[in-house]
Length: 461
Image (cartoon, rainbow, N blue to C red; front, side, top):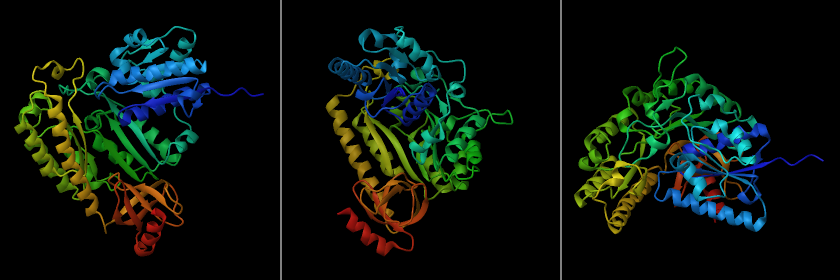
């Protein structure tokens, strides 16, 4: 009788890079026979892939570890438990001290050593690896199999840059991910070609500060993100390109030109501003003003008039006054967002802002957040309504919720539901937006808007 294969369960928190990292951890363990588990209860190895950006990130990890400890006690099973990601990087051996259920701790720069660390953990060593590795971890990580790629769908993330040198005073990324480092162009092209060969149609390039990309090109010179995008756009079968997350100070002229020139580069840009107050921007060490940001947005929109903007905002930063917050509302109105992520400031241990005396009252933060969210929701709904009657290409990425439906994504990342007989997942079809729902758009194939809209309405009941 063939022995069952060991099962791996990875629970990821936070950003898209953690989603990518989770896949690469699974790829690293696949040569040792590991397959995906449906739940922690069914796993031989449990990995908590953590994020340190949000409030009380560490507490959430320890709460989850408490649930795992209870599960082990109730079931009598003894899976290996690993803590990975940015909380692992920040706290290291302290995690082992506080949570005896944990068998190993691995930072985001050491995933290539996960198989060996797992072997050490099984031998009772409880290893901790949070060093910033000298070797290229991406070169040493196992490549995913075509079957694994197909199982993850027709869209994929590719990390091209890690770390950040900006040192915003609220942010832990420079401490948990290290200095800015970029992967070589050839490595990124090879990974993208493997993804496309296995059926991926859309690739999103990831980096903590992705537009600061400066990887070595095949000519031995550093290439910019724009030059990388032009290169990737030449890959046959790749339909769409995106990138995130950007810093306004690194949005170079050639990258703006790429938005003008590359049809495969989607007209959707995530460009965080964080605040509309110059005083708060200076306290955050953003090193740009509100006017700088708005001028940049104007230049990008001049190059790509159909571009939609996404952003990040923090309210209640230490010392933020009512006037500072009103400036944030003002820049949001002037920039005009299709979507945005909004957060209350929360002190991150070890960051300069956490030590400031002028912390804003929690009730004030909440009130400001609700006002900003109401404005962003209004802008998002208005943008969605503006698309009705407009033709656009939709990448079909999954079956629809109802019989006869198929679902996809607009160029602006919105979910789209439509009826398109004969169309398959992976197709990019021309469609006309016919209606707007609370969480998605409705569409019909171009040239068949009336008939397909009626069928869509029936299947949505």
